[in-house]
Image (cartoon, rainbow, N blue to C red; front, side, top):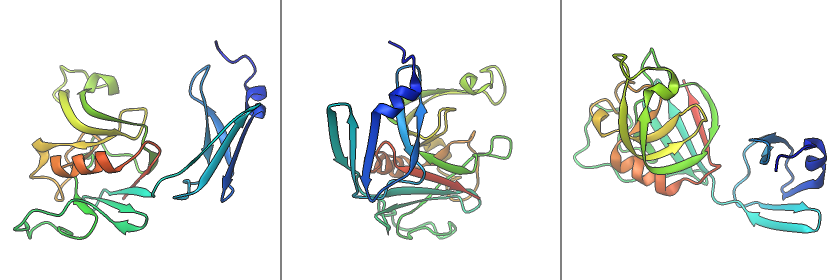
Length: 208
């Protein structure tokens, strides 16, 4: 049943945390509301939620932060401030900068006509396999840039279809150039590792 009085519903909800956090309510639809903190939840903090006589509490997990650097062609993952990720294969391809640095994975972001939007995101969902269809973002399948492809290890970070995902077809471009339609492309091994390490709500930052 749709919520008729959203303000009253928000007043009935109480969110407390240690350390204390400020934030706002965001309605996803007529029946679902979420409380969004003004900054990322600190790792390993306690959060308590109460609605009337009902209450629950939980702890946040480790800080799994992904940073996509568009000009550097890298995706860096740090867990609780420490670089993390699968070890690079040997021998290392020496023409790729940052190869072998802790937590740094070669990546490919959006090409000039389909730039990856700079900003801060949170992980919305994880899909082991998904079919990506260009028509969902306004590019007809009949267009030369149109596509409909199955993708593995897809981590969604925006409602408009921005993902971090496996891109085996782009292996030669990872760490070198940006060739995607906007998503953050990784090797299959790196994408699988990130898919298993990240949780819904974890931050992803895209920077120039």
